[in-house]
Length: 138
Image (tube, rainbow, N blue to C red; front, side, top):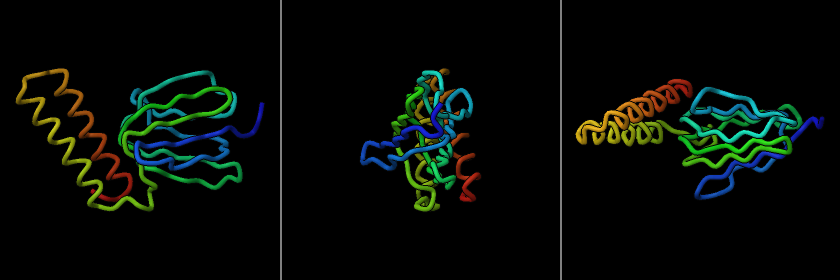
């Protein structure tokens, strides 16, 4: 088994990363997971959280992601993010914007009376707040 795999992180605006990685820690919708070289094929949706790339040289890069999905295979991992930013670029205004959009989705779901949508929006809001807390911006 190889020591590294190809990892690509793409958002609608741009490619954020294309590197050889030892592992990628992914905030999956059903729980966090770590993709590594030789991983079984999996496609998963993402929840808001911190994505960590451990590069071939052992250095790490962290990105805030707001959702999307990841395709993991033995050869590599591709992550398509709704929104993604290098952690060094994330400011309080960004997190406040993420939270405000999640609050609006929750409000709209409650007004529409869609109970499943209310649960999903409440989870999204909680994940956005948790991501801000993890970064140290609330």
